[in-house]
Length: 261
Image (cartoon, rainbow, N blue to C red; front, side, top):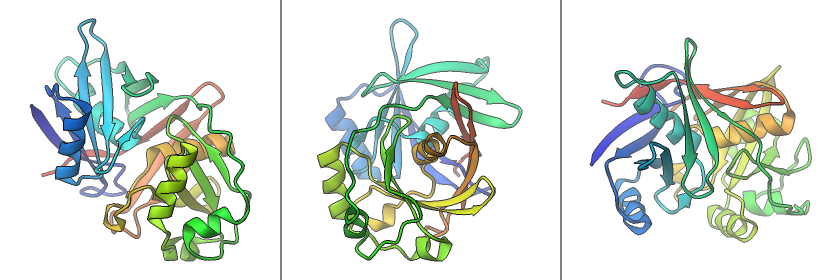
């Protein structure tokens, strides 16, 4: 078994959201979940090489398996595309849903190409955001569920001060998400033209709050139908920056990746 620790989407060298990339491991989903729980890293991705040459990515958070995690995918892309004689473009699939992802090495860095996915048809009553966030919520736009493979409940708040002060009910979010097949809440605010700041809530432990959430950045770009730069990680003291390039044909999510020492 080969295990590598990388930091993804860092806004500066040395920063970013941590992910473990695991190769040459052939355990069950139960064993992989135990591994992720033991290591308590934001996300683990297991690279499975198939007999036909295909590559499948399997994602685990400390508390649950996930259909898709883009910061872990970016970490896997670094391992797969920076190896000697590696291709510049590689197609992989996800373990839970068989979703195709394009991994690309460009001059500007590594990017993941994917498409909007169907989101659960959930009617989000006006009181739901306030209950989940544990306080009265004044949203600037209606709550919406959007997805590029891992559905998020998107909540637009007024400004960074409001965003950073949020202390949500994480257990209630987990229960509500499981009931409606949604992968947590993503609160965000606008900072300027095509610039946003966000926070992701899908871990039960506040200490494991994501410093960068690529699936939320992709979902937000799909919802707004625009390219954007998404800042995250102020609260976790790991400033991150996610670059999302939007088109009608594909959404490309990219950012900095570094090996952690």
